[in-house]
Length: 349
Image 1 (cartoon, rainbow, N blue to C red):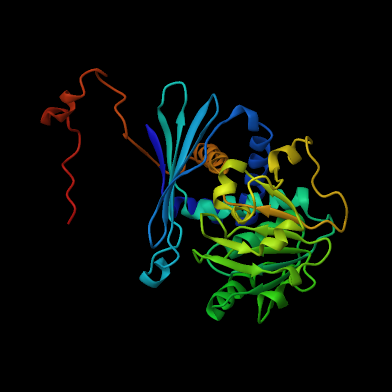
Image 2 (image 1 turned 180 degrees about the vertical axis):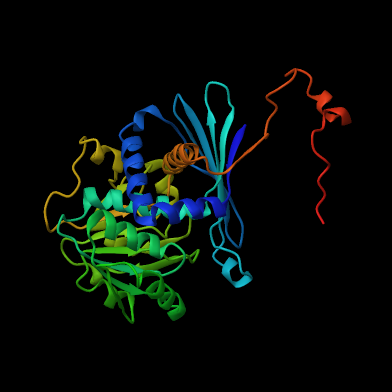
């Protein structure tokens, strides 16, 4: 049987163990899988672009498990009452192809994106970084705030969004987080002033310049999350040219990340090499570092594997007969006979 984890079940799990603990444990899974980088069969995601957004498939596999995520990005969706990002994923056995898990990944994507950001910042930001600017206060903003608070000890959050209602929502949701001071600001530049870390997580599918060179201070770490498809950026090219740049999977980030604005030969370092001690990260307190994050399939693999372990241990979700596992495996047609059906035909009202 295949275990199905829907959105209410995943939300129940996160509430039970708390978002901070979920992302902390997920960050350890991410770190462990990034250290096994060479074990994975990797490919850039397959994207179908339209005027309103993009729909993507993100596959990856090692010798034990295969996973993929279906995910969209449609910035105009909130006007229609739909999320900008919606996703689900599958985890299967490589040996048999059997689907072990089908899971929601809309909520999980926000959790794994924030956990990845914090994991990267532990390797790239100054160890004494405690103040973060959060530019873009939409659906993923609380997760970024809590992950950085839990994993790096960030205790001051300077926030800005062009939509004041988004900032007010963020303040309400973070009001109960102990030890985290949230400071609303009137501009991206004001938010970045004096910050050790600047996280940009905007949604517009446009070549934007959310962060400009005049906003950069020595020692900053930039966590650029929102620029994640062709024609969608957040950082001014001169910010990138003056920084040390780190990416998830270079072939994908060259197309989708902020570095799409730079020549193909401009040097970048894949994050796994820093985590494995094969490349230097921050080399001085004055370095400006950029994590040009577009999201990579390995992160969804880690999240699906973590959810599968948690759900199995706590007997969460439901088991569904997604594929045939009994009877004659060569007699698929026989399953269409009425005497083989164990439940009444379901009709949608």
